[in-house]
Length: 168
Picture 1 (cartoon, rainbow, N blue to C red):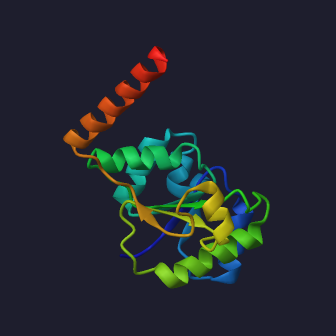
Picture 2 (picture 1 turned 90 degrees about the vertical axis):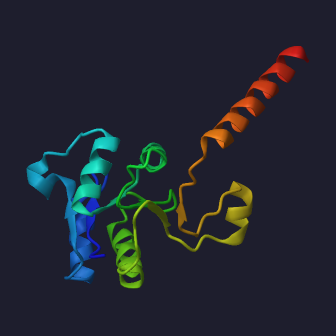
């Protein structure tokens, strides 16, 4: 796969410029410069679907909604082209640090199949941070899809839990 990146509207043009200074051949464009800025302020699912069609990986900071929408698209069978998100430990104005992290990942992973993949940067988080958060940070993962029977089982467990809380 020919890997190319789209920096979302929450990233800076300075970040894109820093990436180009470090690695002139890095295929990255800011969303305001992509397709005449037509996708500025577009809802996340529509943007992810457009990027899927263009085979572009989204790069940004929106850890609140992008993973949820990407997971939904994957579960619905539509999928996405890939997402790279910066962790809270990476300041929004640390353009050099952001660029170094992305360029290093690009050099390592330019031949990966990015379909439905979400990566958090930096990838190497100390083990105590992983243990405290309870999440598998530091690893790429693919969103799991639940079968209808598994969804029904989860729903039943939630209903039982609500019933137990009401009775107590």
